[in-house]
Image (cartoon, rainbow, N blue to C red; front, side, top):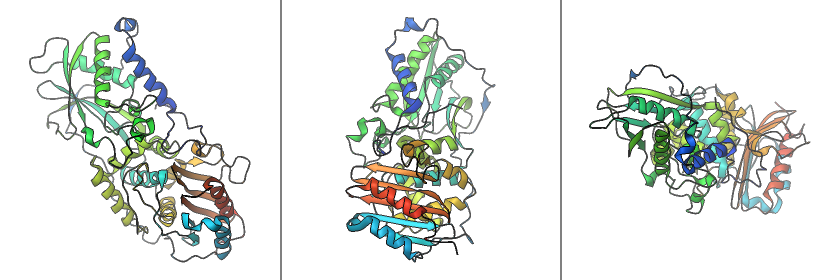
Length: 454
């Protein structure tokens, strides 16, 4: 498993748009330096390649999803009426005159709605949208799921590289693919030492959700969403043309290893022949690692990939419809909900704090609930919450997802209190000092004795 560093930036300073690159920065710089290095410099640097198992004829890979999780019959569901007036009054006092721009909901493990301020009013959620994408993906794909990048040999000898958006695809994997491609070689009318290799990719018009602002697309946090994405299509900034970069890297690696390739991009929807042979497969981090990239580091690319893979299609319109249907099937309050992308960078997304609190309650009851909660940042310890609430009762006792885009602050998560678990969601669209208010909301929700268990 490839290791990765957790984000070390304050979530207020690091908006959901500016995800940390962690080890992907180093991988991206490796790829960048590879393109800029003269070929002669690689004379003594040819990497050892692991032995690959014999080719096996396989049917083309289909999206893998688990059977639908039964609806939560008999499990607690979020009630509609507020049941803890003491907490309700405290939250109203915290929000004060800014009530119109805030939505806050707090629930307990029995499904009681302890407090609720504008909980059914749809708001722009920023990166709290990732809580939807990751829950959907974990439920549909399971905790052991990996994204795969595969090298195939077609019946005529042509090779094809297919992918599922592994955010950590980098030079070491490309080196192995290049070596194996040269060994398999061929294609109709191909000269010795020349490999014909197809790269299966999405069309350029599908690389970004339509609502992403053009300015965001130039930065690493707004990198294009593609199937074959070397270092998540980012170096310091976004890579504008991922297939061109990948072709240049593969060509250089093959020259480095004594061969060359004739490369072409084909549609990712081009079917593989039934007798295509799988030559090699590279697996991503397991689902837990992918969830942590999305929820702890707020990595937009990973969240977008998980939405697409969970739905079984890279057609974003179909993927977001599938996610919306899944939320409805969970028995969640979906009035006013609008799923537009998987990461929350699109300002057209709409969620309610009550729906997010209900989602957290539902996922804590889920067979994979522990993995879901463990994927979040931890107050005072990890991820986008690492530098917040240090030395307070919240430290180590709140697992949450932050969200920040211009004018929007959000936080949703699972809070430990002396009176039991609390599921908290707070979203502001236009508040003057949202970070201070969020801290006060969490501390009030944790206060012992306000809402004793019944």
